Image 1 (cartoon, helix red, strand yellow):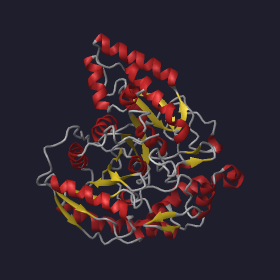
Image 2 (image 1 turned 30 degrees about the horizontal axis):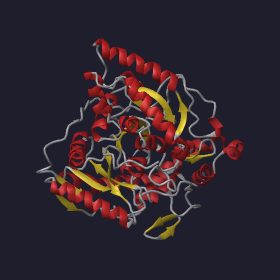
Image 3 (image 1 turned 90 degrees about the vertical axis):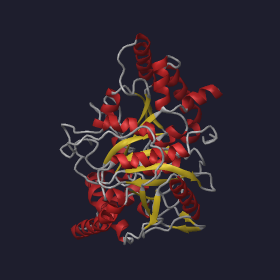
Image 4 (image 1 turned 60 degrees about the vertical axis):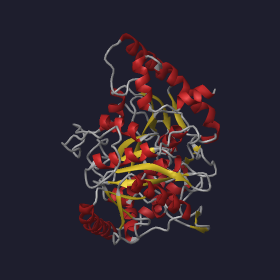
Length: 476
């Protein structure tokens, strides 16, 4: 069993190397991740759909290709968990809701399609909250998905199931989407890596691609694996008018330290109360960046809690009003937080939306000129390590520094400001552990469209403090 677990936790880069030298078969890796996923599933509840028979057949085909010496693709044979809300041809996509429990997609989302075309093998879909509107992952359709490090807590959301299966060895790679932090929140809470590319870098499905807050992307256990995936999925797509023409190849190997790099940081963005355990882990991460040669400077962005309200009003006019279309007929089937969300959204006004756009403009008027002096900006990913597994905004409290608070998602997740500043790339990496056992994380934020710098810093950070170690695996 130990050997199977070790195999399940191989990085994608190492697995690919072993596929090529013949020391590992894609068949064996697929069996290992399936066995691991099923072993922990009774505790974590992270799987929405299983495609094991098809995945085993694809792994056998990949194995034959490697053994024959034929041309292989960049991700040939790597197991891929697909977020349930991402389209995968021929599979169900309820979006966590009883309203759409039988919906089946005929084609894949562009990011999923590119990963599969590069040789990744989908073997499951992972759980999401209803309509992907929550920073935890539970719904009437799927039940409660739990954090593998401490099951009393949630894994983040909305890509919570993807975060869990990566953290527990149930997949090598995973997809996610991020409109308010849905890749970065579970990356932090589960101790994995996620990337919110600049808006326009990765193609989005039709209907989602014109929301500048929305990003489709990738998750894995290492920065290098995320970089390999990002190099596969980015670039102009004929169905997404928002995709940019420039093609950027991000590095997959760490630079020799960070000497000469200038990094700004803020602990609270002027808007959040940060838990002392998160603060300590963030300070430790900043110390490591300094030890690697970077020059660090704490900065005041001039932001206030207006940045939180602006994001909430944006979401209300997008998600909320879309969900409200059939609200009168369908609310009896919806999870409590989805009902709360629609009711909140229906109260939003056009004036609220325009106010949010003014705040958005103010935020970059501060951040953009500041970043002319820096190569990157760092802050915590979450103000707390995670929230309760059954968290509902306004109904289930969040504990911050020993005090219970009734918070919205955007009041504890420090991610939505960088959906507002949508052209800034953000790499979420683990920073340590909170005393409650749940991982913590930092966000490495770049200047607009500067993907390369955030990966260089993330790779150097990871090389100095490798996260993917046997003693850093959840105990489930």
